[in-house]
Structures are given as C-alpha cells and as structure tokens.
Picture 1 (cartoon, rainbow, N blue to C red):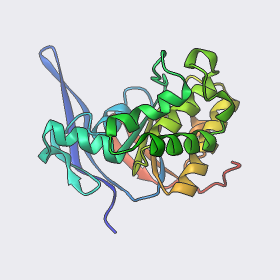
Picture 2 (cartoon, one colour):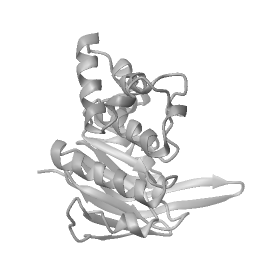
Picture 3 (cartoon, rainbow, N blue to C red):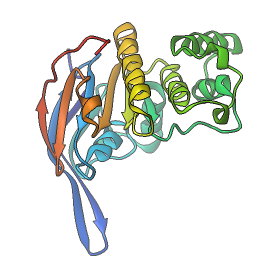
Picture 4 (cartoon, one colour):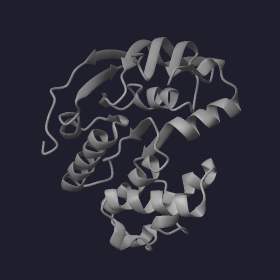
Length: 235
C-alpha cells in the first residue's frame, strides 16, 4: 500500500533580506494510512514548515511532496485548495474558532465550504462528531463561553467532520494545562483508533511526544526518523 504522505529529498528555502534561510534540508519520509505520528523538535527546527508542506499550504523549493497519491508541486492553486478541503483537516494551537458562531456552527462550517451535503446530512454529521468529543451539552455555546480544553475539542470536531484522510495538528496542547493536554491527546488517539484517520502533530513537549506511536525528530531542518514505543490510550 503506498504511503498517504511521502516526502522525497525535500528542501524549503525562505528569503530573508539578502540571505536565504533553509528551513528544511533534504527531508525524506513516508507516513502510512492510520498512523499516529509526532513531529518533534525545538523551536526553529522546521516542524511548522514541514506541516505546511504536508498541509498543501506551501510547496517545496526542491524535492517532491506527495499527499494521498498526488504530487503537490504539480497542482495549481485551485487543485491544492480542493486537496486541502477534501483530504485534510487542521487543528491549531490557537483554536482558530469563529467567535460569532456557536459550537454547532463552528463544526458545521467546513461542511458548508465543502458543499454537497443537505441540511439534514450536515446536522447528522455535526451532532455525531460533537457527541464523539463529548460536547453535546455545550452545543449552542460560543467559543468565549468554553474552556481552553473545550475549544480544542471543538477544533478537533471541526477538523474531523469532513472525514479527512489526514489531520494535521500544530502544537495542539501548547495553550493547555498538562491534564487537559493529556485528555486532548487521549481523545485524538481514540479517534485515530476508531476512524483510522491519520494524525500528524507537531510538538516540542516531551510529555506529548511520549504518547505518540511514532516520532519523527527534526533538528535544524534535518529529519531523524524513528518509531515511538506504542502506548495504550490510557498512557
């Protein structure tokens, strides 16, 4: 079975004044469908750049990035947008919820963007996903009425409601206390088990890294690929 994410000798450069910063240097890796992977490394190691390339937010300066069988360098902007919309889900450390929308509406929003669903179909999908993340009692509340952990659960529901093949999470526990952060990781692992969705998340938190099923370590834009010890959902 081909990897759902594949990078081959990928480099990414950013101009900074008269110099060029090389954020990634010859990265090659493969991630299989259904994996639960942490991209680990200190600030400035290239984690966010790598997630942006996998998330079709950016394209490499050289090398090849293949997502769900498609080389991103060969795609036009509209095709990249469609790939993001139909194959990828995103979870951000700052939640990125729409303040004027309630919980239900925030989770429904990507389905509206995607189209092709009736109101009844959207309602069924949204309510089921909100139930999966344990927030049915808060379904009508707005983000400012929710705790940080609850908002991150909303973000997870929003990322998963379109049934993406890959979910990308950039430092998903960075703004949460340790107990809430652990609960979020446990929730993502449980959804990974039940939905076989591929989860790829970046982190520099060793407590979070220890719960990954596989760790890809980045140091100065160079990857050291390894396997994390498998752990049960209870840690």
